[in-house]
Amino acid sequence: DVKVTQSSRYLVKRTGEKVFLECVQDMDHENMFWYRQDPGLGLRLIYFSYDVKMKEKGDIPEGYSVSREKKERFSLILESASTNQTSMYLCASTSRPSRAVVNYGYTFGSGTRLTVV
Amino acid sequence: AQSVTQLGSHVSVSEGALVLLRCNYSSSVPPYLFWYVQYPNQGLQLLLKYTSAATLVKGINGFEAEFKKSETSFHLTKPSAHMSDAAEYFCAVSGSGGSYIPTFGRGTSLIVHP
Image (cartoon, rainbow over all chains, first blue to last red; front, side, top):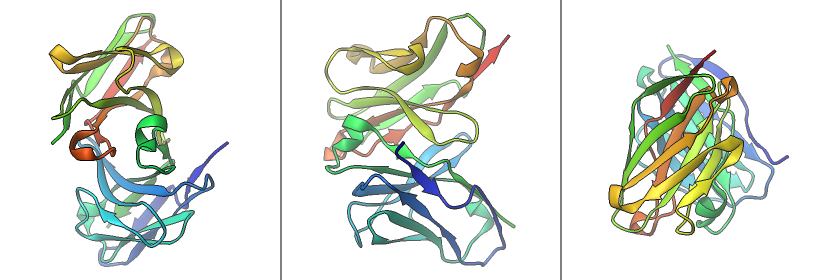
């Protein structure tokens, strides 16, 4: 079974901490994505990456950065966590070309529920 | 620009009843449309998609959706609800501006009563 694995299901961090959320996929996918999910707001795209060392801003990149040093791993970084970043974070991947999003849809991880106190 | 509106944040049905989850979209180009399902404590899973072939699309678990261009709608239906259908359902649209990345709706929580 193909998989997108998010390293933590639940995280509790303090305001001001630097937070790393890790995502690993075993499908050799080129495209990887980070979303945040909030009740009543659906999924909002934070960042995505089409290739190693490449990144593109999504709709809500403020307060976040990403790292893609290896094809299988896409990390989301909260430089200085704030309480308004308390949320569910979902990682997803799909194969090249970008049209694969249409043909095959995303493969999602199970999510990381982050609480910032 | 593209957007999706899901009518009703919660829909409640009895087991065996018809399921109807509503989705309306706006897109400047012919759209690609999707329904995803999220079971508790899991990621999203593709339920079905419309990519300009047949307007009635069949998906997994007995769900189907019909693309109606005149109504800019892509409503999700299932003839008979099961308890296991209780989940969050997301409609999504892509294709506008040459981007294939979907824009998601706010989600509809389906509640199934015994």
